[in-house]
Length: 116
Image (tube, helix red, strand yellow):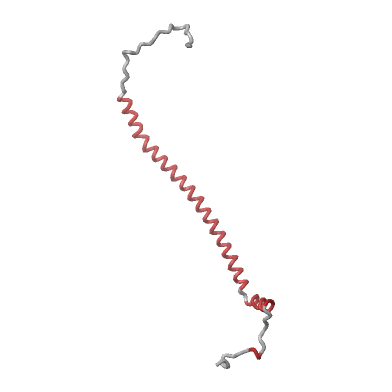
């Protein structure tokens, strides 16, 4: 229920003589605003996209550098282990301890001239 107004009497509105027309000048102004702002908006969105890609690629590079550092450390450790395992002193110790090998006696030696 409408609230009665004490300032002005309420009368029914008769709009039969009103006709809505499009304002061509306003439409032209709107087109100009869109034409001017669209390249700016596209440029801004392009700049934002490039910055996001730059940050993403930076994080990816940092991750790959950490993996490379870990791989280099692992390679160094494996090279040290291979050098230790292949050292002649260690091989001789293991041959004596595990296989019961020792230095050959003079009777066990075969010289190159005798083998023919």
